[in-house]
Image 1 (cartoon, rainbow, N blue to C red):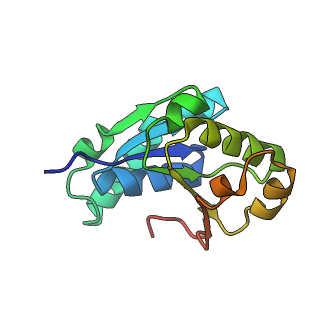
Image 2 (image 1 turned 135 degrees about the vertical axis):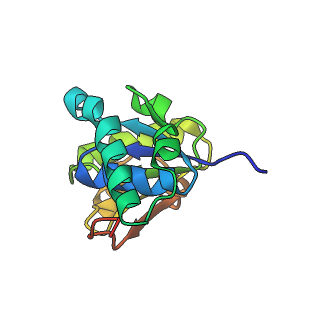
Length: 149
């Protein structure tokens, strides 16, 4: 059996926690981070509750096992180090996007970063000092609905 993949969930509000539940129930190791301490502190319990809710509807076979795949990283660089995928769920602030791109560039590990279609990747690209090769690893998709639905 291959080693599980790891995702960094950047931003652990409602949408970030929903994405974390989806990845955890699919067998991924999930590393959570959020610059707002109280939101990050509440995230693991919120996700565990989400997983139990999914299980009640037959959408998660092992909510306790999935919850055990959740870890917390207080630092963005620690959160994205060595991960396969970064799911970013923060506010639409260009300076935050640039900071994330800078951390991903320093990681140099090829992780793909994704976020919903409202992202301002084009503005961040213009204002970032990082090469466009990094921005080719950014995926913007139509993720406007709750991921678990």
